[in-house]
Length: 381
Image (tube, rainbow, N blue to C red):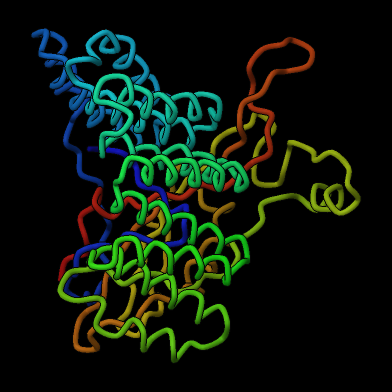
C-alpha cells in the first residue's frame, strides 16, 4: 500500500540505520520509472488490481519529483477507470482513494481530499461489511484527514464515532488503537489529563498488544517531556528502540509561521486574513523542499540541510531551525543514529474566485509534511 503517511500526530516514522559519513554525499532520488510501467500496464490491458498498484506507484514517483498535479491526475484517472471493479478489489480501491486523499491534501485540493478519504471507507463498508476489521480500522482515515486539514474538533468527533463503532462490533484491538488516536489528539490540543484518560482506557481494553504498549509509552514520554521532565521521559523510553527501529519524537518547537506581518496583524485584530504572503507568489504557487537530517544517539538532530531544493530554498530557511530543535528518544550510544528525509509543502488551498466563480488558489497557505526517507538512497559510508 502506497498511502503517504503524514506526520500529523507528532509521532514520526523513521529510517533504517546507516553508517556514519565523513563527507556529505548527494541524496539521490530513486528513478524507478513507474510511470512507464503504468503505461505498459494500460497498453496490455492489465487486470484492475494490477493497474491500481501501478497507478499508485506512478503517482508516488511523480510526487517525489514535486509534480503534484501529475500525481493527482494519475490517481484520479485510475479511480475513473476502476471504480466499476470495486466489488472485486475493494481493498485496493480503498487504498487508491486514500492515496488520492493524501496527494490532494498536499496539492491543496481540500475538497477532493475530504471526498476521497470518505470513499476509502465507504467502499469497504459496501463490499466487505461495516463490521469487518479492515473497515473499522480504515475509519480512522476520516479523522486523520480532518486533522491534516486543520479541523481538530471534527477529527475528535470522527475518532470517537469510529471507536464506538469498533466497540459495538466487539473489535477491542481496533477500538484500543482508535482510543490511542483520541489520546494523541487530546495531547496535541493541550489536554494531557484527557490524553492520559483515553490512553488508560485503551490499554485496559487491549492490554497485551506490543504495538499499543509501545505507542502508549511514547505518548506518556511526550507528556512528561512537555511538562519539563526530560529525564523521566528518556527513562520511560529506555530500551524501546532496538535494532533498526527509529526513535520516536518526544518534542518539537512550534512550526514556523509563513504569514506576512500584515496577515499576522489582521489576525490579531480579528480581520479577514489576506491570501498573499511573503512566502507565496501572487500566482498562488506551491512551495516544496526535502530536508534531510541525522537523529543522533542522544536524540538530538544534526546536519540538518535541504537535500532537494524543489521550488527554491529561500522560503524554507526557517524550517532548518524547526527540525534542529526537535528531540527524539535516545538510542544505543554506540550506534550511528538514524537518517531521515522529509518533504515540506507550503501551499494555499483552492476556492471559488468571487468575480469569475472559477476554482483558483486563494486559501490561506498551510504547511504539510510527509516522510520521504524510503524514497531516497541514504548517505554512503
